[in-house]
Length: 269
Image 1 (cartoon, rainbow, N blue to C red):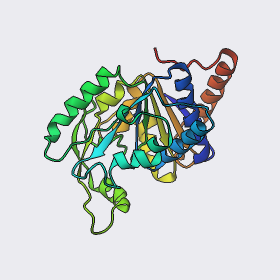
Image 2: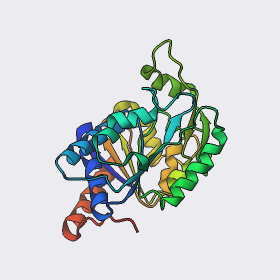
Image 3: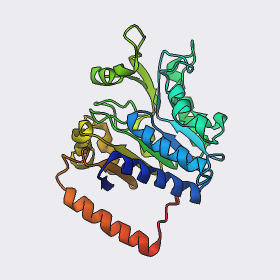
Image 4: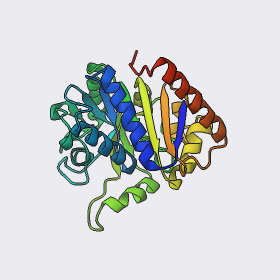
């Protein structure tokens, strides 16, 4: 796990966009796993800027989002499909038919959505780069604390804390789903590379659990310690509770020196 700490959230977003651009240079038809939430928005805006300047193209890419609410239509402003269209897809050249979310149509059995989504990911060749945020309670996707570390895409009940955190996005008289369909932790771990971004003091405890805590279902993100190629990008506030901060800074400097000397080989194997 590579932990990189920047002074502010803007630098985190810029570095993240640089890693996505590097992936596109070596694999223009890359398969991306995308996340929603406040933190990825800054990353998507940097990518949109790079697309407008001609630096990156998503024309040949495929994407699979981590999750989607259950019980609201895709055209609802609160759906993650609408979020992705509004914040990213509508502003780049990705083909809409190549963008996938684990959505469940009205009347469809939601228990069948997960296996079908897994099959689509396999048919696309697997995910080359999975982008993640992290919840206040350490969740990734909607894998809440106590989720199986081997879980697959499935229906998940959201915790009260997650509902409260997301409640700001729903009007007082608006239906807020308590269920979602999410990639499982086992699904996420199959991505060839993982990029997790976290900013703000509210994420500091979860970040400490992710990076330095024991691997436990009570902090689902801690499972990423088992993955070979994870980059964690943090701002100072999100890194505030890390005990080995000095070492992470040293390791980043040494890794950067190696890349300057030998190049940054970012191609998936």
